[in-house]
Amino acid sequence: MRCPACVRRRGAPPRDPHQARLALHGFLLLAILAIPAMLGTSARAGAPLRFAPDAPLVRAIDDTSAIAEPDRSDWNMNRWLVDAHGRTPLDDLLALHTPRPAQDINALDRVPACSWFRPRNGQRRLSTQEIARGNAPRALIARGPLDVLAGRCDGREPFLLIRDAGGDRWILEFDRPDHPLLATGAAIVAARLLHAAGYHVLPARILTIDPADLTLSDAARAIGLRGGEGTLEQDALDRLLLRLADEGRVRVAASRLPAGERKGGFRDRGTRSDDPNDRIPHEDRRALRGLLPLIAWLDHPGLRPSRTLDLYLSSGRYLRHYLVGLSATLGCLEHMRAEPGAASAESFAFDAAHWLPPDPFRPFTQMGHADLYWGLSLLLSFDEAQIRAAVSAAEFPPELEARVAHQLLMRWQTIGRAYLERINGAGSFRVREEGAGRWRLLCDDLGVAAGLRNGEQQRFLLRYAYENGEDSGAQQVRGVSSASFDLTPFAPLPSVPQDDPRRYGVATVTALGPQGERRGAATRVHVYYPPGDPPRVVGIVRD
Image 1 (cartoon, rainbow, N blue to C red):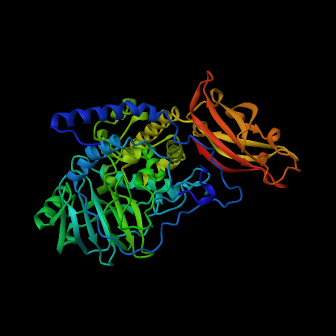
Image 2 (spheres, rainbow, N blue to C red):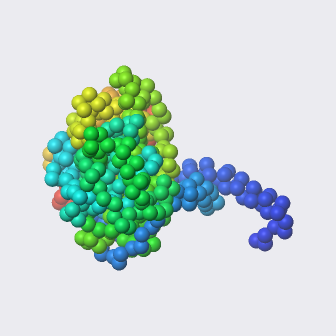
Image 3 (cartoon, rainbow, N blue to C red):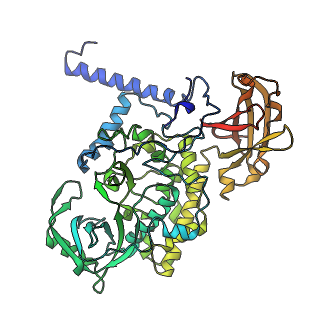
């Protein structure tokens, strides 16, 4: 959400069915013809964006205020399919909808801390030990006996909701018999990586349980494959455990639920009407749009409501939004039950730049260049050691651990390179002093910093304009190895009044390829020169 300091100043129906069909076809034709023109119109066209230079940076969004306990939202597969594949696309077409800029960002184009995301940018780099541990304490143990409250015993993603002897509630996810170790391991690996990126996941680790410790509660509910609930029968639970048990014990990915009440999953559009804190339409949240590079990396089948969780926390009495059902990730690893040589380069021959999960998710279709840059920066923040540390938490046998890590590393490179071709990689803008009255604007290239792009073939072009729109006429071209722009020509004289427009400027930075071709959209860096103090970056806008 942009704070006030960060915002822009800126007939009668036909008489018969045949006539009705003609009118509808004509309207749809006009709508389709209008789409290219609308897509070619910049979402940021109009008056220039202006940031209040003295306003504090918004680092947290106030969406954790105590609220009345919401109702539980139930998910139904049939209704969701109709909405996702039919009603929503048709509504967008008829309304001539175009994506809006993300609304959950601050002046520096980042997502502040909120009930959806907790940023780790700007903090110290997580160690491999912290990555491996995630948000799961070492003492994360389910103490028997285990009371089964609900579950799904059929299908490709079986799970149980249990309560242990200490009163803690857990979600237990299981492997499929034809893919031992992979589903439980995928749940742990994905949880570690998503937590490190900043998303809310449940604390989880690999455990082994004794089926004899599981007892069916009197009110246990069976959760259907397509939504809805019924009575969970002992026979269904016995069949699940019989096909999974190995020498009397079962390997599970165990995720502990914080104290609170489950309120269903979140939808991919609109807001939740019974949550006053939920003020930004979900399709307009960068925290959700920017998930795409991570979801592609993890080969996630899709963020349908059954794989998300709104939890009404007992501590704080507000809804926090979690990503769950992570045993469905790492679908690219299913072939690992074949010979070791199956994990070859052909595994990554997919159109990574246009990859979308099988399940539609509306924030992804609304994603713009700025959202993609932000999400890609999360993906590329990982290095090989951190990825291997996340995989180690899955407790795979050594040979399988090495192969899974290799697959993730190769997919990381493939997706990273594909998305880098679509964006302007300029980022990490900062001002550096070079002597009295001399200042430089520095930036890094996202791909070069990650080792996925050749710095010798990347350049940046800077144009500078003042607040009143006056173009300075100056241009500077710099290579990535020395992406440092001279701000001295644009600095106002000390005698210039504080409110003079020459104290506020916009540096437009464009990425250039080896042949001078433009790469991605422009990035506009807003710079303010306070009297007697060094200039500073007060805002960033990516077109």
